[in-house]
Image (cartoon, rainbow, N blue to C red; front, side, top):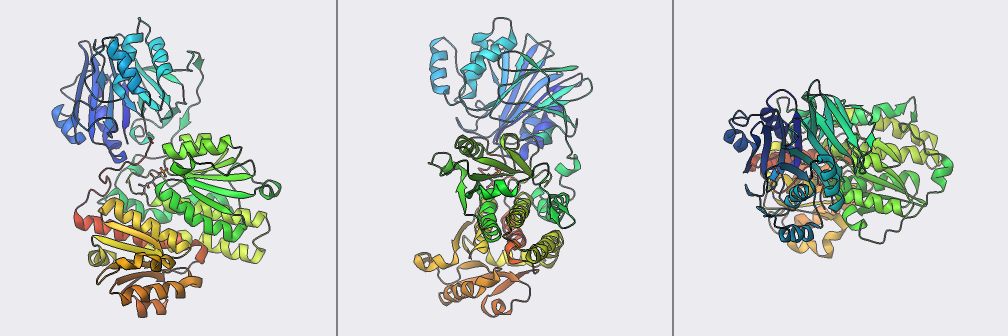
Length: 607
Ligand code: M6R
């Protein structure tokens, strides 16, 4: 999704902006641009396609002099990904340049109004209305023009603004779209994502909705929407520059798959204390938990599948009914949520627009919200009543891997914590489960180490159409495995609860059809085995996924991927890893752009 960077200081701005934009490439984009200001005014350079083209066009920034500027990567929503629609956009008088993340919902009405006022539009974007509004409301006071403009906008926006009348000041404003200010020495920055800042500074200020910032080389001032000056806390970013780089791997996705043992350890270890689970700085008392009539989990994409898997763990260990809802559906439904509902909102980025809207909907119905989030200081982390960070570190590849397994780790921890508090997990079982959970990082490493044959299997099973099947928690793994395959290798993959095959889908099974059967739930293994036999009888080629030592599977499947033993309730966190690798190698074989799959964005900040 779109990315924003801004710089003001003494150095040449353009190379810094281009470098920042490269750090944001992973978010997904289809055009890029920068605007830099010097004594001659504002100069804009923008191109459709990759940042490399922008670097070429600007001689790596050398052709665009000036030490203050803004940059943008655009993921097209309103208007095709063309040079003209790319940001920054200029006002008709050339005084203002802006970059924008988000969507202006009332842009059509504003556009009509501005056209009747005599403003001329160059692009099809919603963004261009903003820059003309700035010109319209400007009477010598930039902050006042920004405030008046913001008051007219409906929707979401993070804006970076340059004004030719303020040659050493950058302006920024946000509403429902992230923007972070970076504090340097004699220079300051802003960006829509902390990864674009960490190379320059670890000291940041998180801008909140409705706030406006003015940045000069030596100062940062933040105001509320009425123009009152605010004192903002400075936060320290713990991510290192190296953590956001590839570290010798061919792709971020592979690096992040390999980081899973360490990431899950980072998620679990600080919460496990001598046989006890502690949930960071909050506690859910037995009394509070007894008043919970149900748990609703809401999220999008893989985070939703993590929720589907977490549901089995919570229902099994806590005996509380769990409803898992797609955030994009929940936000427009009639959610059966009240003050006795505990809502788990799961999001790697913490900025997914649908998930934020679902959170707000549940909050409006009186529910208590726990966020399970990776990105510190993100919108969901801030809106939730309590946040459990997944501590996965920066996830750059669009396809989530360590983000997903750390979400599972937190859900397992949560299920065990609640189950114990409510006395629904007995001490002996609790101790055994806790031992097993502590071993999860080690078992993840073994899973990675024992699956060296996956590149060869990917060659054999990657085909135009694949089926992923499983039951119970294996079904959640099948859903995530199929999504991974679709999003990075562009192969059609369907996932089915194995018992559903005979209700229609089995009609699609023909000679040679690849079926990936997840069979790690020992209690249901024989049931899934019957489904394997059924599809094989119709010619399917079956690749099964099972615990090491499962002889029955070996006798029925064409190929088997093994994972080490773990308590079944935690098995999804291991079982998903070979499927991530299968998708990765299938995509690599096809020569796909693995870290930046077509049409996708890392953080879906628009609806
Ligand atoms: O940042 P979030 O966890 O809220 O993102 C949710 C989905 O957009 C995300 O999981 C998406 O499905 C991934 N690309 C899957 O790999």
